[in-house]
Amino acid sequence: MGPGGAVRHFNRRQVLGVAGWGLGLGLGPALTACAPARAPLPPAQWVGASHARGHRLRQIDAQALPAPAVQRRASVLVVGAGVAGLAAARACAQAGVDDVHLLELEDSAGGNSRGQVLAGMACPMGAHYLPMPGPQAHEVSALLHELGLLRSELGRTVADERHLCHSPQERLFIDGAWVEGLLPPAEPGSATARQFGAFAAAVAGVQRHATFAIPAHRAPWHAMLEDLNRQTFAQWLDAQGLNDPHLRWYLDYACRDDYGAPADTVSAWAGVHYFASRHGFHAPGEDGPADTREGVFTWPEGNAWLTQRLAQPFKDRLHAGRTVLRVTEQRHGVQVLAFDEAAGQVEAWTAERVVLAVPIFMAARLVDTPPQALRDACVLLQYAPWLVANLHLDAPLLDRPGAPPSWDSVVYGSTSLGYVDAMHQSLRPHPGPTVLTAYHALPRSERSALLAETPVPWAARVLADLRAVHPDIDRRVQRIALTRWGHAMAIALPGVQRHPALMALRQMRGRVRFAHADLAGYSVFEEAFTAGCEAAAGMFHGAPTRSAGQA
Image (cartoon, rainbow, N blue to C red; front, side, top):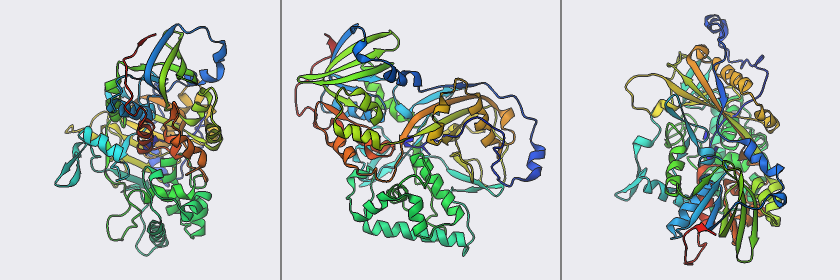
């Protein structure tokens, strides 16, 4: 799981109407009989992203605003302090630009890689892990070396195991018990096992003829990949005769986890890329390990551990609570109008260069005269909403038979993406209170329901999902903090990968540059970080810098 991230990923779920939410897990009447009486819902609240600020852009006429109360200048102004914006600011600073400022909509940096503290325990509000970077993600690798997460020993790259996910890593609840890993079990020689092997062979066949990489644009592109890009993953699987329900559930889960949408929505390129860009797919019984997630970096607060360190050098030049209203490129610079949410006044910034590190649909609203590529990209992309729920538990939950409690727990057949345990990385010698972070990837039709003033129906839905495997959840949970992401990630739809509009935005070299995971057509940390680095690369070519100051 993990946005961004995510990205890598989050989860989101549904809305209202908790009745009828049985998951058909075959737990039997015994579990129902032993379940405690339903307790009142614990306190629940919305936390995190402010949709009201984001919607201000749709409500304010920048031409009718009062005269700016403050005039400021910068060499480089980065709009958006998510992963891409922080990467762009870092790259500029490393190039010797000492006058980089960031404007951030929210009250803290990090985008959908932010975290929070609940009952004294850190937990994520979005993306929560980072896989080991591949060779093409050299900017990410350099960052991890700088942070001490990677080091070179005798010509090998070695990870600091203190920051890698502790074992046990993943488990799946199926047929009344927990099993290790997320791949549904299959008896040797069964139809399911044969289809696992057939899918592994299909992925390997594509890998023999095409290269996959993260960042995706650093892999060569040819006819086979374009064919995958034109159809949905479900269509491609059907054509391969891969129709086993256990395999299809797992692949659907993988697509929702990485791309925010199911296999019948995302492209076949995206479905294959999920496996081929990293460790491939290994069926049980093959040489090597069965399919499982490779070593990943994770922390109780998720990827906020990374974004907090990226933001720290800019603490005096990171201006939070700023709703940017207009970006106008001029002959000798760029003017940016922003609304200071705390002071209730308009600021005017003048910068030599601006990096727009915001989603494409926002960039299209901000730019005074958007280029054709930006308008085309805005029409092209669709976004998946997410719901992330952090639940404070006063003690460990009762567990079902099988695999022990793990970092990542997923329920077969559930529409949620499961939950991670924020205290799994803790070195405390005995179990105790913890925070579970449940992820829900929602259909786009439910985005408006996330705007509900009360979080109670959503909290009830999260509990209903968890209650199916943890009947004591109601008496253990003390508080629920929910984060809504209306546009959490761009969906990797057919036709999106290598679209000319996205490629054109990535290559623009004017005073206004674009940096966001949207440019890749899907959202993971490596894509966002690389986009920020590339937008800043060569920006000044040795031009002199100056210090910021009031005009």
